[in-house]
Length: 112
Length: 114
Image 1 (cartoon, rainbow over the protein chains, first blue to last red):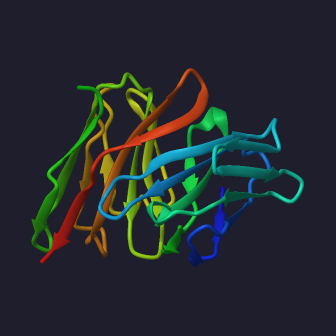
Image 2 (image 1 turned 90 degrees about the horizontal axis):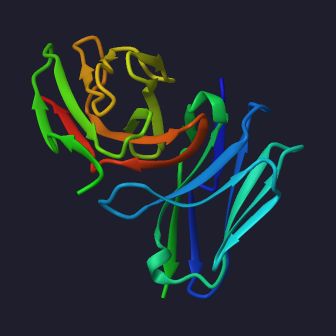
């Protein structure tokens, strides 16, 4: 079955710097890759997703890149702000199966 | 008010007892999911259901059971066979029409075994 590995487990950056979180997946049939943000004490919420027919997607300060050949995808946050501090999860899924497997999470701390 | 509702929010159980966590959604989603969240281990899939009267095991299904008799409801039973049941449990719904999509999570249920 699908296995998703996520690195780093913790990341501390200065406000205004960029943050990058990387994930690898094992099942080459996976074609949907979402990223979720979970603030302390709250439920996870989708922040961006990408499908396998594109290599990059941007939404304001957030971008995701996908390398299908290498089976890895990354989340890029530019101009980080203290409110970006949270746990971020990557995930992978095969469209038709609906089965969504998550990575182990990255705790991002943005220092003011 | 649309969304996904889990209950109870907190639950205490004695060893050897089964307990059922409720999950209801009014978003008309086909798929529903149960995840377990432990510190440092992310969200691990227990069971998921693509459609009414059908469900599949996730990566950590042992000691758990589910049912999907209605589209809106996907209750999870934590049985006495689950070796380490103390955890935070998240229910989610999402996906329709044959394509994976955004999951909407409930607020979670925290189970403590005494």
